[in-house]
Image (cartoon, rainbow, N blue to C red; front, side, top):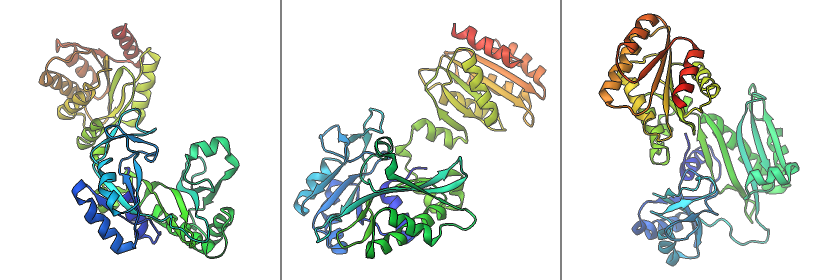
Length: 403
């Protein structure tokens, strides 16, 4: 589950990570009051207005309606309302929005932390994530903060450092000091960075995150270390332990089909192919997607209806699948271990009749308990549904209906 910047920062602050403070604004008319409140709390006189959407590259992104960038600076309270108006309510297109502008329903009015001083400010990159090959959490960091990390990795890979954390003991003091040293820090900034690293890692572990990305981590002119941005992804499997974080979910930022499938208890991932699949079990789903490719088609989705493939769940799955205009056929592949195949077959027939005319052919392969009875139900239904027994037979029928 992805979080907005202001939500990620609230978690960081809870774990003692210094952040760029701000106030969330959802209405233009509230912008001035928010700016005054922020000034009272921080003393700032300039304000950074940041669009809150689930996408990176906001600073370079452009709001379609106004031409404003997604992150702008208001040099005084008199500019705040104008800057907020240029972003809020518009559609922001960035390099990560796939050519489609995302509606900005809220902005973060943040304090200016790039204040002048004797020393220059420095920007770093830092993230914490799981290295699946090594089976360990890893802190990835670089002196090249404020830039696309993909560009840094491609052009100057020697400037990216990694620190693996042993899960048996957690992050150690020497590792935090090593990170601060590699970033070229000394004195008070060195001490502040070691504290920052430890608290950041504790936040990552404490909230069951899949990723924390801070870009940039700022060393201010008075040697404070601050998280200026926060891109946070939480592990959905751990949300049951964090109802307060689960409540942060913003379904307006998600694909409507994903939201609908989640509400129905279906495991659904939309793909770009032309053959939809409906299965029970993740392993069988992967095999079914292979069958589709083998037959000359391309999977349009991953959809696991789980162990209770009754008429209601099958009907909901049909509704979701049929909202994809690219779907030319549907392959249902169910193994009846706990669930009886004849009940699934009847569920398919009932769902088909409930929906009405389904404009694409359906191939149903049922194996397991009462598979023979299930095939008879499908064959006798008189509907545009083709039954199959073997995987090869299912693949042949997919190829046939696509021809």
